[in-house]
Length: 156
Image 1 (cartoon, one colour):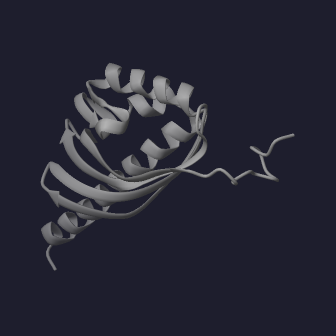
Image 2: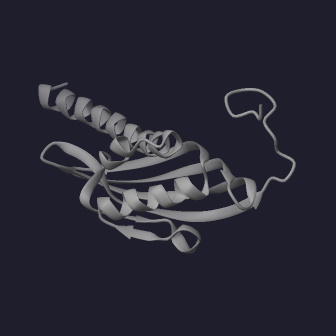
């Protein structure tokens, strides 16, 4: 094995970890209302398309504004991102990642949202970030009998 082969393999592994981390940071940013983390995962000209149910946003400022709107409507969110399939091609990459999200909606109460994210990433000046994240909603369903009885979000 040549040093170039080893270097290419190490770079592919490092890139995969960086992209997996971006997917996880998206979920953490929304769940913890971390605006700084949310801002840091996008290139400035990025697009977030959450479909007819949640809207489409161009640029980091619009994406952050949409987060504030969603945080007001759904003060508690818990995303589970899973089964990320990532394809890397030089300084670009695509991914599909499944999501289940339990939320407390101010009008509907507890709800579950499920779907699939279609992601496009670019590495610019050595930094990987989203340039597009598109969401296909599988379902949004109220959970009328769901009530936490223990833990940080249980009713006191």
